[in-house]
Image 1 (cartoon, one colour):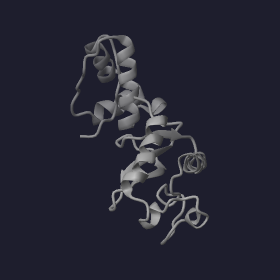
Image 2: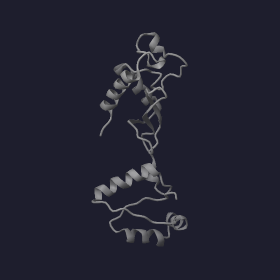
Image 3: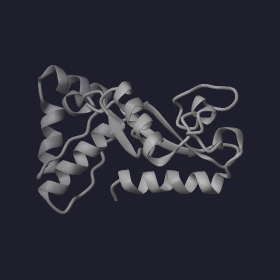
Image 4: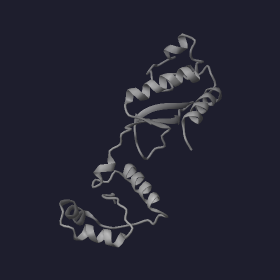
Length: 171
């Protein structure tokens, strides 16, 4: 059930035949490992190129090495915690999850979150920047409204997080 190769062609029958009659090392491996061939029609060459690229990045088939590598290996994700606060976290990019934005390095992502914490008055603990049991350091400096300790309501905090998300994501 694993995808091993994704490709595009104007003549799918001819392209599949090339793979199954080819003598190259890659063709021989594909011939031995394939169990089924499926296809999807697209409206134009451009759509086909974009679809192929997206599917390769999401599924990472073993015989599509060129496009499989992702320059942006870190991504920003949002999820609600048990108390209803929207928490943001920079983590390894995973094509199966919806990301808000992406970064080349972890440090680039963390620096972005520090700046957003300052610009939108967000809690650094809920941004995954500090692993504290109690209040974040910024709360003691009066630069955090206390979402980390439940002083600020989740509705008020989430409103600022939503403003940030709306500003930095594309439709």
